[in-house]
Length: 103
Image (cartoon, rainbow, N blue to C red; front, top):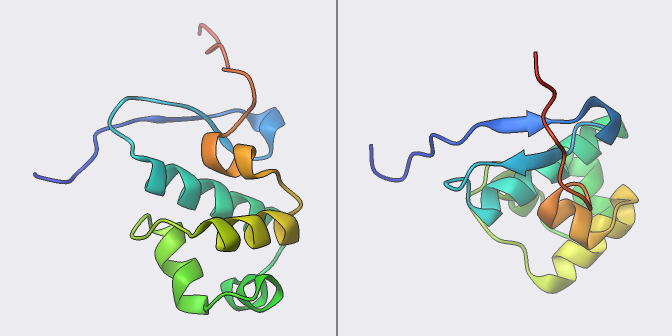
């Protein structure tokens, strides 16, 4: 189906739920959304609480987490600050690539 991603996500349990490695079809909007959601849930925040503290509309947080919108630079900076994460980590996951464990 057009627009559907068949990418698999690999989550490093030591990386607090952040996506650390992705296959080629997962787009940046989706990756940012996955990482924002993981960081928000780690803090036990609702979308409304995050939106209020980051001075963004709750609808933007919802759409961002679903991968439907790219955040503005200001919104991304505000979200990262409230979540206690770096912008780079929200955009790319872990700073270094994770090597998948062989099972």
